[in-house]
Amino acid sequence: QVQLVESGGGLVQPGGSLRLSCAASGSIFMIRAWGWYRQAPGKERELVAGFISGDTTNYADSVKGRFTISRDGAKKTMYLQMNSLKLEDTAVYYCNAVVTTERGSTSPYWGKGTLVTVSS
Image: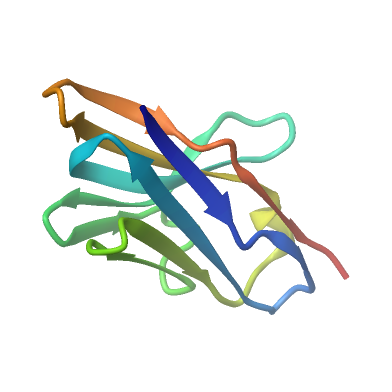
């Protein structure tokens, strides 16, 4: 019904950059909210960055000043520009979206995740 597909993960050295993308497709009437989460080994999933209302964004304290969330509504695509990556940024990054479908139902959806590994 609604699919979220992340891309852009990979292996990067500390201090490097990556850009993640999340493409939404399917029976979408409106994307009401979306954001990026991550889950490191042995840890709980946490919010990294998100659009909380309109164009208002919020970021986890650990990524403020280094990560930037953006979106292209026409393409139904969300991005996460990650700069100055640190070892502790290593995690599987997930896209989440609260979507109202063309049938009128509103639900949260998750992508399958993309792995980001920061290592020297």
